[in-house]
Length: 352
Image 1 (cartoon, one colour):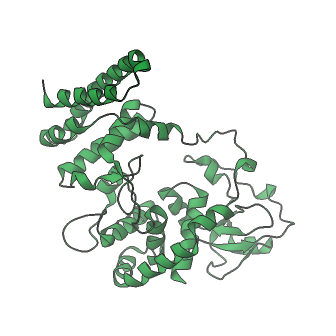
Image 2 (tube, one colour; image 1 turned 45 degrees about the vertical axis):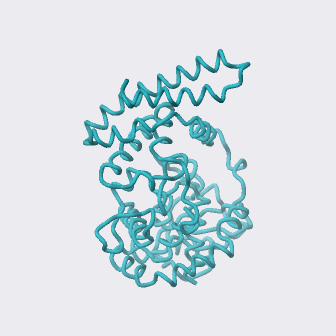
Image 3 (cartoon, one colour; image 1 turned 180 degrees about the horizontal axis):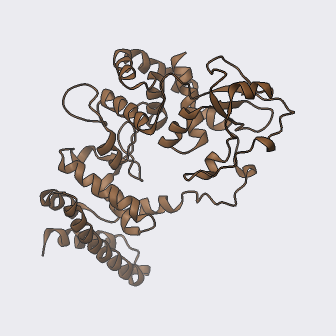
């Protein structure tokens, strides 16, 4: 019996050992089917991984260690579906989210990191045009500055999610890319992360690690799991590739008159990506045009000729924001308005 198949049957024995006796008949059949199906799936993925250059040595080292993880499948199925019938009224207010993610302890830790890493941050900003504070804010929002990066084993999680099949195109390639990282010398033990495969200080998917991770400290290695310099340089590179424009803020808070005709300013285009998120933005207008309508930025960071869209995350009468194209770059990292606003606001607070 091959080492690969022996590991599958060992995993099956563990499953059977914890089944209640009353459910042994049905549980046994289900466990057998699951183990057999997972085994067959891994063998088919191995062929596709070899075709993409993954070595047989890596396959032999990793595949026999994998067992199906039903927990990650449960978590994936529990994600919001983003129903197109959802209305703006069903979206909660931003204020509670902001209080949790742009709180005093996170701001204080961010300022401490900002000051401690200024030489590195200044150099990366000079090279990329991505503000120091934005790099720090992404780090703070993703992992609380490295305090929590996730404990799920990436190969096992991604293989299980790919096998389940709901989003196989995504997870199978991420699993293969994880094998590529191991092939290139990334230690298996550092490949931990979220249940969905995000890993390291920046919480990159394995494909993003391959495409975008950078050596920030000049030691000749890329280590976004243990090197703050590498993680921050990699975040900056992500933003560069996503289209960040230097010397332009992400947006500013603004006051909106009660008389504003919001229906006349509605966005008429449909975004090809996360349409519900972008649907909450108004159409684009210059800052001068917004001022003419009584929408007043609370700071002078935007010029009259800058294009901006309006969002009112807590509804009329509460703080609104004029957003630039760089805000859309933040959404490329995580397509959520609450996330995007929190990144921008934490960056402003860290740099103040």
